Length: 232
Image 1 (cartoon, one colour):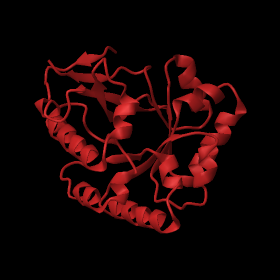
Image 2 (cartoon, rainbow, N blue to C red; image 1 turned 30 degrees about the horizontal axis):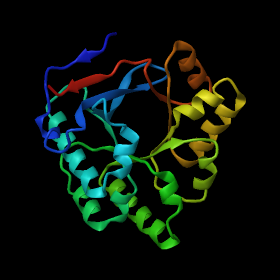
Image 3 (cartoon, rainbow, N blue to C red; image 1 turned 180 degrees about the horizontal axis):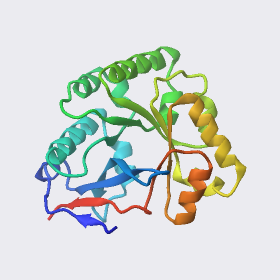
Image 4 (cartoon, rainbow, N blue to C red; image 1 turned 90 degrees about the vertical axis):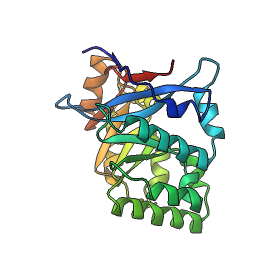
């Protein structure tokens, strides 16, 4: 299997930021069957821009605008079924941004909640408001995921009762725990909160075996080629 560079170039992204130069789709793969079941939508950044810093400064409105442009760009392309997208917690705490999110038309999404520490820092009332918004998204048919969970963060979400569909285990946690019984323990804890567990950072056949033996059902990483739409 080889990576594919598709010809289509999404001009919508150029109007948003010169720092975003394309779209990358990373396959989400069932570990047992090795069948691709979806793909995560990621931005390709210019060489001069660090992606984590860029998105950390991005407002909720900018996040939704980027998502809208990405969905338009991917609407009629292959490999775009069952998309996974990242959203900061601010999209769920700011009313105007959330209203734009629930008005999105088209395919149902796997919404990955990032900035988990920011969620934990919210007041009880704010957390309850976020949970209500997540429940509304679930009623619309979207799936809700926690992103970048590790063996420390997981304990903080045991009592949160979020309406989760799945949990993604952080690649650094996987690399740290993959040869130890602690990985299976982490996967087991994740299954207490959600019906699906995905491990990020799978880069080799051995990584795939470790993830499978730990009990996870999905995987993601450089072991499987991604698809890119580079901007000219």
